[in-house]
Amino acid sequence: MKNGLAVAGLKMRTIRARLKLFKYKSLSIEVLEINRELHSVHEVNMLFGFLPKETKILESDEVLIHNKTVDLNTIFRKELDKQDYLQFYTLHYLNFAQSNKSISRNLLNDILDSKISSQPFIESMQLFNIVIDPRLSFNVDSHKILEKYNSLYRNIEFHVDGNHVIENLISLTVIELKFRTKIFPTLPILIDEIERQSGLGFHSENNMKYAKDLCIKLDLILAILNHYGVVSVEVNRLNILISSWRSKLFENSQNLVLHDNIDGDELENAIDKYKSYFSFKKTKAVNIFVSIPAKGIRGHAFDAKIAYPFSGLYKAFGTITYASGKKRNYERLRSNNCQVYLSKFDVSHIFHLSFRSVMLLPYQIKGGEFYNIGELLVSNKSLVYLRYRVDILNETIVISSKNDVKIDLFVDDEDMSALRVQKTLNSNTVSVRRSLRAVKINQLKSSNRITLEGKSISIFI
Image 1 (cartoon, rainbow, N blue to C red):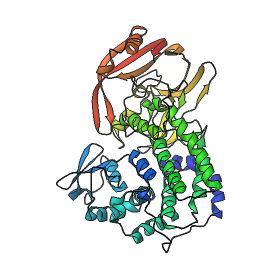
Image 2: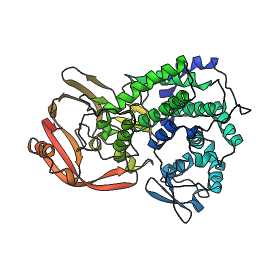
Image 3: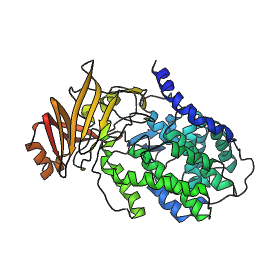
Image 4: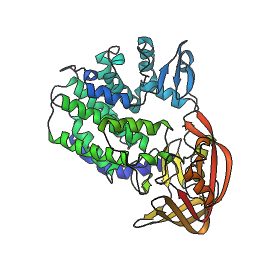
């Protein structure tokens, strides 16, 4: 049933947008027109350095992936375990740490010949990294690259939608920029798709981690186009769209607390490094950020819908695993995502497997000088309609309701004495208990769970 709902949820909103794509032909590349060394472009190297490098090759035929050591002698031979699939998939992305000065050709061949490497999203990640990372491009035959390019062009993930389609099109465009002289047929398709997936000037999935990665890759494409003097209407359109996405990302970078984020605490630093490339002045959001749109693309998402402009003092539980199961379900509870709740196990979202959204229970936000919010929750096995008001003031966020409500915030030991935290503790009905939170995938840290409760809750920011 969940599979059917997932397909149904995607079909109608994607089919209409796809009809115009029939005018585009799948233009395979049979002969290399040129072979540009994209990695030699300074701006490309700089931007590539901002992208996550999730795999580090260790000694003794082992790799470290998302803080977990993986034995290369067994990973290609054993049956895929649901607890290991994130590590297994990430290995195939070819996102190797910059400290690895060289990459074994045998390891590359094992990865590229693996059955999983024929999946479109993995092909996207591989193609992008192969042509931008000189450690890879010098070790992978150009005919193998073209074979993957032509395979991906035939299998764009329109049925998955969201960041998958954009990643597909980004990689196809980068290959064309490397091997084609003047005509880059995927570029206008990519720009149309970015425009279609834009909501309120940002990527419609509203996930900071994925938006950051997409923005960097699109800026990298702009850097290549500018370096080689490509001037066109498409280039101008791309520049305008990405400038908007980038600004929204930077302005809301303090709203990282709620997102399905495998980078964990490192995400804010990663966005700050990216900001420094543009000399973007540090700003702070002063409004609610809707992290899961009521309509349109939801994709990778937690149960959380609303991100408040907290400071870095307050955190959510975080992301410890991407594998389906009790831990994954625990991550998604409203009580673990800085969301207003009634009962500890409240949820308002139904998921497909470990990451795709199937159904978001209805909600409504009316904004002005304050926000009136209504949300349908599953609480104690019943559907409950929760109404509350949020006022965002200079120093505080005030949540008020006719009923007693709760919100849980995670505060680390080193931040417990901060004045804003102390004011929050002294202004509310509070319970504090020791807890763990996910610093990033596969890594927990001792912290404090602060539960605020009442008809009026004040959080000092």
